[in-house]
Image 1 (tube, rainbow, N blue to C red):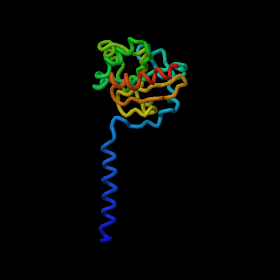
Image 2: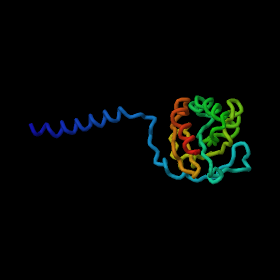
Image 3: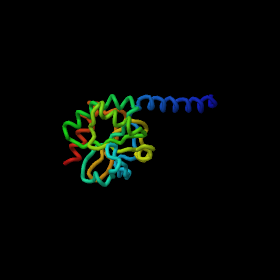
Image 4: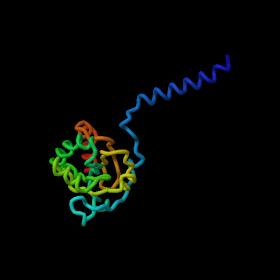
Length: 174
């Protein structure tokens, strides 16, 4: 009888962990960067390669950093949402063009619209790695002090915008 208790106990523990895991949302991957300073960068601008942007340039502003690429299918899904958000001028959106070719990225923005106050180029993906980017698109809400307050993994949807991002931006802008 006792020889069956240990395997039964281990089995029950595994069933509990499996049940917990199946109840989690795979889109909600916790980021260790939330409530930490945004990793510093200095990257060239997509439209004007002779100019650059640094995290210091955005100090004092609440802003979104949207990681995108012309080769990204999901970026195409979220892009109209970002274009509409940009028209409201509620929050500046900086585009981080991730592992892309400049001509393709410029063509993509010309074709689908440019919601960004500026796009910067992360050609080798190092800045993306520093931000813990799992894949594109991803969007970060960064506060006036340069601290990451939220990370949207996957496309920004109208629901995520209305329920999470815009209320947070409004709170941070106060």
